[in-house]
Length: 470
Ligand code: BES
Ligand code: ZN
Ligand code: ZN
Image: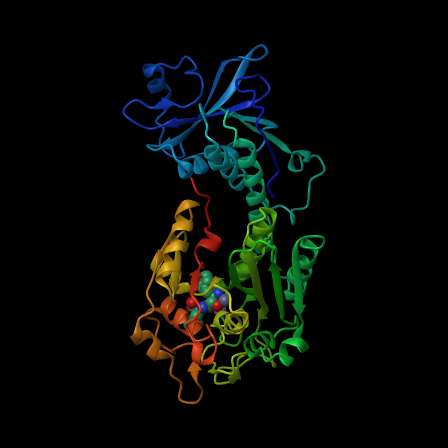
């Protein structure tokens, strides 16, 4: 959770607040606050202040408000003052100052955009998840709300803070779902949490249970879910404002735990697989934000939820299943389950003919091999939409890289017994691209296949970056 309350009434350099001052790197590092704090070049050097991105120093200066001394945290921006460097620096500051009751940012002439960057950086960087820690009674600081004030004279700053609060709250929601252990977030529980979240809001939620999924022909979702004691669900969300100018459909992979099924994962690879619903959790968070920000866009979301387990009733390698789109799939590997649940959800999204479909999924280990744990792999069938999503990722500091779906990879989908296979046994080359080629089969309907622009985001790495951004 993020326990910060943001305001604009900063009182920097008082004895009862911790002041954060960003520092720009360069031949002579520059303090970007409203005061030079009496630090001339030689004292800056003596303190070892470099302005290097993520570097921090704590110093004491004479208080400007009240008596005594004021604590200051200098935090490096690197060599550029922009939204991304400020977000990261504020994230570093939030982690360094997690115990402080009052924090004031002093960035001279902070623009509204910079206020938003500092607030989102602080809010997102200060996140922690302790719901499952047994509290030792004396640790009250865990629940205390931190007051964070940012100095700005920009008229738009208040609106920036309001936007930052929405973004932080929505990312918190997504992160809390991702971090919740799989015994506390089976598909039914995930669906219930979404229903609760959007009760009394502009977002409508509809949940399909297992009998309904069978009735609707969602053989991918029911196939993956059939091996588990915890039945699958599909959650459909919709935010449809009267002034909507476009319709975006979001589809998320929601495997609440991925053991691999009968194609079981080795023990070490299974640890962390509670996160395999991060795509679905992102869909929920994005829709919360779109509604709270009253964006003039209709946003529909499909969360395809199942637990992938081995059992006497589980899907077997060699099984052939029939998907929502009537496409038949030979299951060659039950660990390639994400594409099965997504295939149904993509077909459902296609049926409502949105302007674009964007899916998000912790889909392949191959994504991490190719791009590491911070860069999302982006694929799709429409260059313009790929570019728009790339530009959006760039603007918010979420590295994303475009990857192809080559023809020769598409050809590997052929199955001797069904329409397509879900994996190519023994062939790991281009695993991320093969998965995308599989998903593409479910975009559009029949003859109109591929007529709907579609963007696929493989977030296997970025959904669990292991370490904080510095
Ligand atoms: N959930 C995994 C993808 C994954 C693997 C994410 C490792 C993060 C780390 C997915 O369901 C999966 O197991 N994919 C297989 C596909 C393969 C069997 C074709 C993979 O990537 O190994
Ligand atoms: Zn898997
Ligand atoms: Zn998976």
